[in-house]
Image 1 (tube, rainbow, N blue to C red):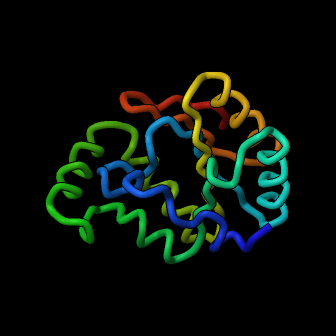
Image 2 (tube, rainbow, N blue to C red):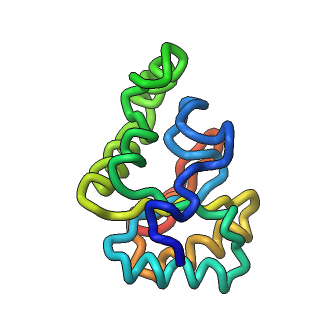
Amino acid sequence: MQPANEHNADLPEGRDAGEGKLFPYNTVVGVVDEPEQLESLVNALAAEGFSEGEFHVLCGEASILRIDAEGKRKGLLSRVFRIVDHLGPEHDHTAQHVRALENGQFVVIVDAQDKATKLRARDALAANSAHFVNYYSRWTVEKLAP
């Protein structure tokens, strides 16, 4: 396994906070506390058939800067989207993910374009000590595990 800060640290082009959302749409996102748990999770995702391009690990300062929770680094449109995010749960989720990264935890993002894939991702995350597991679609946020 690659070190977490190198393992797909860049999200696919056009699918990051530059679109105004912290995480790409149609993804399952969870927090993992320890490197050993992360390694186990990466192996579980691979065993579930997810390719390396279908999940991403965020950690450290570079990921915090990439999130740009206030939209300050990405211009006016990003700031407008951040203001809109304050109207829903995304703002609180963004803050929680940033805190996790500041505390040395890992944020794992898994692409999930359909319900079956969403459930496979949820199960892999939950079975490997991930917490704050949520599904982000274009219009909703769904809590999948505490």
